[in-house]
Image 1 (cartoon, rainbow, N blue to C red):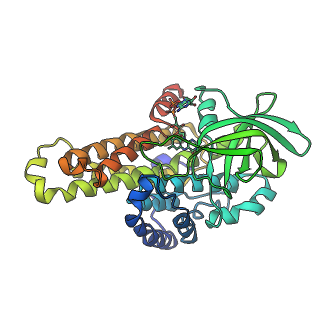
Image 2 (image 1 turned 90 degrees about the horizontal axis):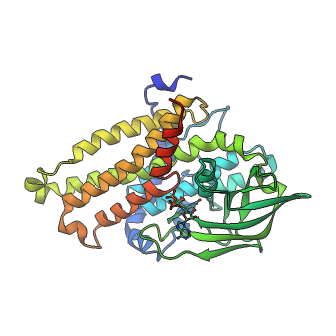
Length: 369
Ligand SMILES: Cc1cc2nc3c(=O)[nH]c(=O)nc-3n(C[C@H](O)[C@H](O)[C@H](O)COP(=O)(O)OP(=O)(O)OC[C@H]3O[C@@H](n4cnc5c(N)ncnc54)[C@H](O)[C@@H]3O)c2cc1C
């Protein structure tokens, strides 16, 4: 399909209904968002309720295609309130996306329904291998094939949305250097979660360092014995799903700027960036997201370039919008109780989570002209 010529597809009535249900649950974030930001709450119960509302299952492949638009919109609705919870949503949706695309039917049968409905939660430990595939660093997990599975050893520095009964995806390289992608169970005795040092933001995301101490990963948990073609299949979805964080955060930054008009409009109008500028930018970004989200299996180079460029714009626009919101707020935004400063800290995360701004620029620079 020639996505370049497409107009943005409309949301279906079913997709709108899912978004409305998500909006209802997400509204509850207003009372706990500060506690999440301070790392006092990991909103597991709310994540499960978002799952019941349909937030983690709308992007399941159907009839050989998949539409990620409703999943992205659901995370955007969450991100209007809380960037950390929106990131947890990405972790969950990414894991569902991997499972749904795996050829391992036993694995799908065992876990997909529970993850897509929010009964079970989990994350994605793919930052290291995604950087590795771009030639930025080596793969940190080493695997050795044995009868019935792999023995995996090594550490992942940061994996979010984890807990005792959670699952997460990871990639190890086998003794020939070939990457293997699998799902790990946090409850396994030879997989150990350790607390990370406190973060600038995202402290409520149940983010842990993960040690694999010669952990046995059965073949039944392998997403793809040959991870390279599998990653090629899921890579656009991995990146596009992150747009929910950016879109929701920018929407709220625009709201913040409008909120300041009443009292400070007479002087804020001299600021270079106005909410209308970001409304225009956001509308273009939302349209591009919807177009690209409709064809996540497109293998053309033109499509991949657009995905990378959109994701880059998402990170950079998040920072620009949060920066502008701070300037519009003035002293009010500098008060810890005001959300503008939280939005600024969350915005940087959109730009540094893998693929980070610098990796996206590297990937774009290395595409053939
Ligand atoms: C709050 C939070 C949650 C995250 N959640 C996830 C997740 O769920 N899944 C996932 O795969 N990734 C996760 N990450 C990692 C994230 O996606 C990025 O990979 C990370 O922020 C660094 O990316 P970068 O490209 O800027 O690399 P850089 O920061 O430029 O370089 C990263 C490399 O530098 C070294 N390094 C950097 N900081 C440290 C440190 N404190 N200690 C030791 N070595 C260090 C490591 O070798 C690391 O691989 C999380 C990061 C944060 C901060």
